[in-house]
Length: 168
Ligand SMILES: [Zn+2]
Image (cartoon, rainbow, N blue to C red; front, side, top):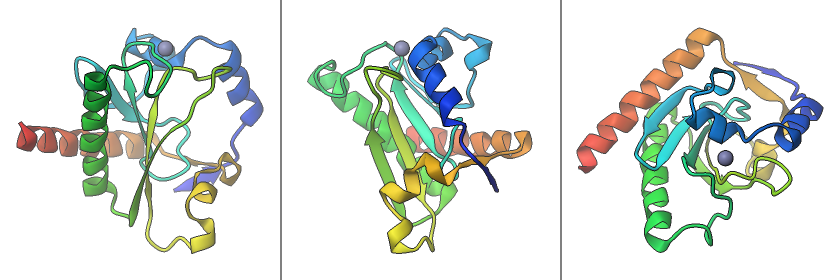
């Protein structure tokens, strides 16, 4: 997979001055369409448009809430974790690699809608290039062809569905 430099100026401009991209996605605005791999009544999981690692995913609540813990009841927090775990397990099934990174960032100044990242660290990345270094936009972002993106989303969708069926 190719990498291209991340256009941080454009990204930051959209994040800080554009509408909430997650709410637009939930509302079905085609300008904010993403490859959705799993959906529940409360949550969506979809391919990150700016993947620093192959197959990187985001998992979000459909409702526009911002704080990762205080804006959720305990039950809603645990439901979020249940969805995150399910999608992360499916990502392991599909993507291989040696480690799963789960993290929630965001900013009140841009991308404030709560979102969890799922990133699989591939095998063979030198220690000093793992963890925060592996996640930095300064590495550039991977470019999927439309076929690669569709294929990846299909495989993840099937893996999550299989995990969800097994869990129910
Ligand atoms: Zn939102």
